[in-house]
Length: 310
Length: 256
Image 1 (tube, rainbow over the protein chains, first blue to last red):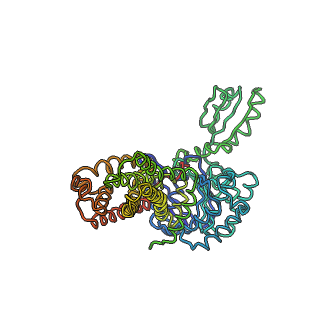
Image 2: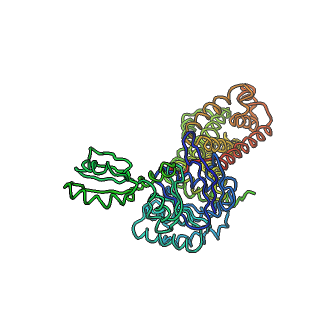
Image 3: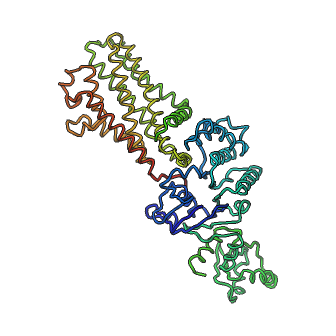
């Protein structure tokens, strides 16, 4: 479905994405990466909005930059908001479909169908300036699916949705994926993607750090030193316990000596002994944070793995 | 293969979207200020004979000032507002989005400006009375049509190239080239839109005296030369804008 062959994109001297090689078959995939990791650049390359500085991009076998007809098969829901305050959702979605060159009457039907699918029928004749963020988000999804694309690309689609809206969106995307259509879902929140698909691309600093299922990525992480932070007034007192351990890579005192950051080759060894040390030495440790709760730390671990430092 | 119906649908959408209080108020201001000026002169009993100074003033106020101001406001930022508003990506993701949106916005800007220009011309001729006459009205309307189409193509091209400082660039170009260079007695002034419009004004109104007094301002070419040059300029400028929009890389949103 999507093939990137050693693709790099430069913005002047800034690297957007760096030597990406990806070969995705049809299916549902999550693109995970913190803000500024290169997700938008990747999406823009896949949708022909940017021309790669180096390498080749192919979507459904064609170069999206050269062949604009390909856009008929792609639906994009960008992260940016829609700011047409005096236009109704029905007018806007119909207009968007019309810009594909589809006949006017069919555009109206397709727009109505897609707005119904996202639960906007009751409000579709109101100006979009009166919509809540969640309603605008649903309208954005409607314009992305209205022309019945083969590939749906979503960028932070849960922005602004309340819990009910999130549930409905998840169900909609699950149905999309189970109907055999392809889906690419970019987010910086891992669990949003996990609800839809178990296949991920992890991007950081414009590089593809890992790809595969959640368990495959967990295996990579298991082989990679991970950072654990211990918080509390007695955190520095753990240094003499940790310094001698062979599974400790490095120790770092931060935040006015109240945070001890430990880089570990074997986190389980720490977990099994920490309670015992705290108890024996009578230490006050208030909080314990693993890399799992901090996506940036996971990405930094993967980046070290990617560079061959582990 | 162009699809005129699709262009028309973009125009309809853009007209509906642009029908706001603010834009309508500006439209009225543009249409009314030449009428107010002419009315003040008439109230002060400024003689209508000879009609040439009145015609030249009307030409300056309508096909030049109204057209240029209206198009600066509505044609120049046609693309940059979509880029700044981060809505460009929605349009650019459509198979025919880039080209037809540009064409549709171009025509919409022309319609807004031209309607103000024609209303203004008509009202001014009414205020001037029989001395103005149908001929002056018809010439001013024809020049407004030519001015709007030609200047709009110039401004959409400027807007598609300089989408970050669009207005500053367009205003600078207008002052330096269309008002500065167009009066310079050199070959370069023949490449300006205003020189061609002034040439047509003197030809169509048979103002030989004005032409012989300032040939570098009104030119000496026949009308068909001015019309062909204007048509070529309009097509080239619009074509360049379409190519630029079709093949350009534009910012879509904050990098994520």
